[in-house]
Structures are given as C-alpha cells and as structure tokens.
Image 1 (cartoon, rainbow, N blue to C red):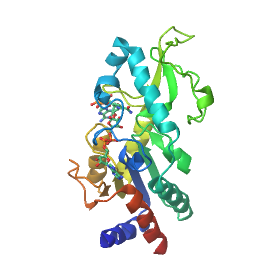
Image 2: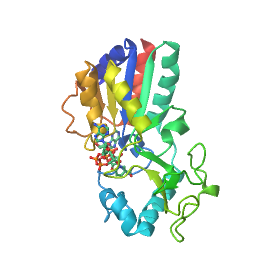
Image 3: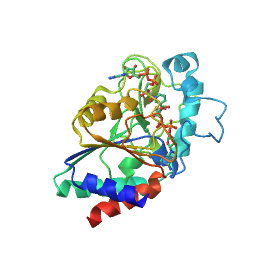
Length: 258
Ligand code: NAD
Ligand code: APR
C-alpha cells in the first residue's frame, strides 16, 4: 500500500485541479455509523429509505423528526477524525501551490467544516431546518453547525412555517428528491474538469453522486478510491483499500515530502 500511496502522492502533487467526493465512511472513525455498514443502535430495524423520504414525512412527521433528533444527538458530540483534518490541511496547502481542490460531500454532518474545510453538501445539512412547502429556512444556525442551545426538539410539537403554514422539516435531501442546484452544479463542474478524482468512504450506490466518478473518468481524470471494502465503482484506477483515517494523513505527508 505504501507504493500506491507514493504513486498517488506524485500524481496529486503534479495535478492542477483535484475533486474529492466523500461519503459516510469518512465520518465512521469519528463514531458516526454509516448507512449501509452493519448498523448498531436504536434504529437498526428502520432503514434510511423508510424514513428519509417525503412520503414518510407526510405519513408520520413525528417519526421522521424522532429519527433526525436521534441523528442530531448522535452527531452533536462527534469531532473530526484524522481523515477530515488531513483533508483540511491539504486544502490550505494546495492554495499556496496554485492548485485547486474542490471538496464535495454526501454527508450531512459538519465535520469537514469543523476541521476547517470548504465543502459543498449534496444532501443538505443535519443542522439546518426548512419549510416542507415553501422551503423557507427555519431557525437554522447561520453557520449550520451544531449548537444545541437553539436546537429545538421538534419531536413533540410539529412546528409550522409562519409564511405558509407548512410543517418544518430537516434541510436534508431525501430519497427521490432533487439535489440542491448550486451544490450539484459545483460537483458536476469539478468532476468534469479535474485531473484527479478521489472518492473517499462512499459505497457509490446512490445517484447522482455515484455518477461523478464516471463523469470525471469521461473527462480523462485518474480515479482514486479510498475504501476498506469493494464498491461497484467500475472506473477506479487506484484503490487504496484502507480506512480513510489511516490513508489520508499518510497521503498528505507523502505529498508534503515531494
Ligand atoms: P434518486 O435516484 O431519486 O435521484 C435523486 C435525485 O437526484 C433525483 O430526484 C434527481 O432530481 C437528481 N438527479 C438524478 N440524476 C441526476 C443528474 N444526472 N443530474 C442532476 N440531478 C440528478 O436518488 P435517491 O437515492 O432517491 O436519493 C435522493 C438523494 O437524497 C440522494 O442523493 C440520496 O443520497 C439523498 N439522501 C440523503 C439521505 C440523508 O439522510 N442524508 C437519506 C436518503 C437519501
Ligand atoms: N474509511 C473509509 N471508508 C469507510 C470507512 C473508513 N473508516 N468505514 C466504512 N467505509 C466505507 C464502507 O465500506 C462503505 O463503502 O464507507 C462506505 C459507506 O457507504 P454508505 O453507508 O452507503 O454511505 P454513503 O456512500 O455516504 O451513502 C450515500 O446514501 O443514504 C443515502 O444520502 C445518504 O449520503 C448518503 C448516500
């Protein structure tokens, strides 16, 4: 693996534009369970697909809020792990070399931001709320980060929007919903113009995020995948089959040594 990390470091050090896509796996070592690894904890008899959908919310908004309240409590005390930190440090260095690193995440936690990264969220932000009808933001923390004092517990009393009366919901992209236009545009542009595309901690099962690697490949980019388990991503050139918390610090160290 050392040789592959060295080779990847050489490739990255000589690339002008780099695109990084992260999934739940990059937060696994911070203690946040992923979606499709063996689930533990209170809700393992539910699936994200049964709760994270507009239909589920329309049918039983309190149940959906309970799940998000549980996820907020689960995430609130979690901190960035070495993978988030290495990525944020790399993002700082890379500016000095006039290289461009675009970080895109499918995650709804704010660990990339906590580590100091600039990141685009394809699936929303666990700490933001909005109206389910008119989409007006509701009592969102401006920076979208987890500060519990103004984090209302919506489970007991459903809050309605003061503009249109719709129920307030988490500002998360649910199954079947369109992605935020700006974030998706940023992701498409970066994947279509990068020289190297790195996929970290995603099962590459859910579209359109899973299609970004193919878009990058189509544009001639080299594809690197960091994931201890195999994925259906067919365009990968280099697989670093190890945890992100191990690979990312080693990769950044190797780049800095070049
Ligand atoms: P999907 O197959 O329904 O497609 C998602 C949406 O992406 C589509 O409705 C479409 O609007 C858009 N889309 C698809 N291909 C596109 C393309 N090429 N260009 C632009 N937009 C495109 O996806 P899904 O599996 O039903 O999930 C919808 C989204 O919600 C996914 O991105 C999923 O990861 C996300 N999600 C988030 C959570 C969470 O808790 N964070 C849970 C479930 C789903
Ligand atoms: N380092 C790197 N990868 C890891 C680690 C780790 N320490 N631990 C687990 N993984 C990998 C797993 O092997 C798996 O391939 O992370 C991946 C997690 O996959 P999922 O649980 O499917 O999470 P993700 O790919 O982010 O899901 C995509 O689906 O439910 C929706 O919107 C939700 O954003 C989510 C999307």
